[in-house]
Amino acid sequence: MIIVSPEMWRAVDVFKVVEVVFAGVRREEDEHWRTRRSGARTVRDEYDGQNAELADLRERLRGAMVRRRLNQTELAGLAGLGRTTVSEALSPTKPAPSRQTLTALASALQLPQTEQKKLLELLWSTADGTEGEVRSGPGRPIGEWDPHDLEVHPAGSGDTVAGPGRSAARVLSGYVRREHDRVLAGLVEDAAAGRSGAVVMVGSSSTGKTRACWEAVQPLAEQGWRLWHPFDPTRAQDALEDLHRVSPRTVVWLNEAQHYLGDRAAGERIAAAVHQLLTAGERGPVLVLGTLWPEYAAQYTALPALGDGDPHSRVRELLAGRLLTVPETFEAPALAAAAALAAGGDRLLADALRRAGAGGRVTQDLAGAPELLNRYRHATPAAAAVLEAAMDARRLGVGLHLPQAFLTDAAADYLTDDWAEQAFAELAALVHGKQAPYAAPPPAPSGALPPRPRLLAHRPRHPRSRSSGSPTTSKSTAAPAATTSARPHRSGTPPTPTSPTPTTSSTSPTRQKSATACNGPTRSATGPPTTEAPTPWHAWP
Image 1: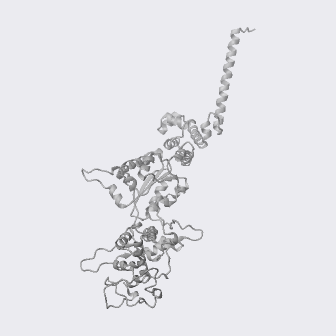
Image 2: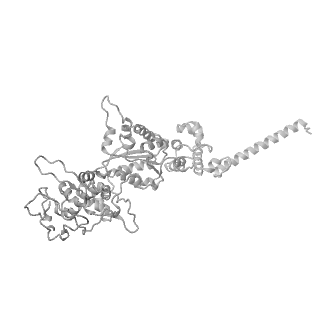
């Protein structure tokens, strides 16, 4: 018989208590890991319960660690990361890992490309990780932007394309891809694959730089990328203040980049911030797109003279290897592609091709045409009088080259004031593509006849209606007497008309306009007496 003392009974009680406690702890731990592996939300794992994507990401990493039979210390060594960084990346109570950390872990775990891509997608979509940064960062989804708000020029005027069910405001023609578009497409593909990049399109006004950038980023819109156009309160100030907030999968839109990089106070700092954005792996992928005129590109990339200051050193470094030239004209393949679009019903391209001819300056015509029409519609009375006199003369059979003396004389019936100098100065101001409704002639050599200014070829298609907002094409609007009587003469001096009705060719009945059939007061232009017979209208130069 075994006799158990009271001390032994007390020891047995202690052992039972300890066993019960450990059993409870084991059950609690087993329950925790079962719920974690099943993906259920527990109170202690509240962080993952709020971020399903982040929980999925971490479970995938842990699963890969189990398959490779690695602990956190071993994984940190293979990934080249600190033990704390790996622990925080896997911890449900810590923020999402950075893209750089996640890429290093996936590489160390030898995950296939499809799995690495899935991990990045989970990181981008997590509410507390990258997507949260995107929400607070500058910009908005590409699909929410109107291209004209990004300074893409409208192509053509509202009256050209308005119709039932169609808006007459700000339209775009079909797009013709050229060699620089293929280079841009490669950069966009790199960005979509996770590699940051930048390019600055260099070309003269209205060569299609901004439109090319807009067309290039459309594949990124389908992937949920954002676009940020620094603009308010000024371009440079907005860029300088918020470049550090740009988050992954953002297009930084620096159209007219001279406003950013050429700013005296902030240009160098903006260039440095863009460089840091492009080279900091954890902030990518991002795509920086800019445009510049050639003169600005030359200014920013030129080396300073010895002993001079270097105001653009950081800008020059940023632009090195990142300039892409946009040609002035369409080459033969592009013209053929544009013609195909025109034949398919693109009226804007059809009109631009007709006006541009073999010169190939299609984009300049598309961008310049609506601005030229706006210049006419909103012109001062003096400038409008010159254009209306020129248009009436063109309708009556005159060529494009009109003497300034003729326009000065003819336009008087459209006005009552002293106006000539103001009108010619206004009409010579340039619009998109460095075009103007009126091209002043160069100085004439000594003893030679004065050269004639030139009326832009685009104007005669829209004769004589400003107030309606839509130029008419009717030929019934008669020209004032001064336009018919002060017609250009080879000598540069308008002859005195011998009859109120100009001589016309038999094949041009629409040119037979009465010298007095006009709206408003008229007067005949005066000139020196001459015995020379009036030149027939069809023979005018």
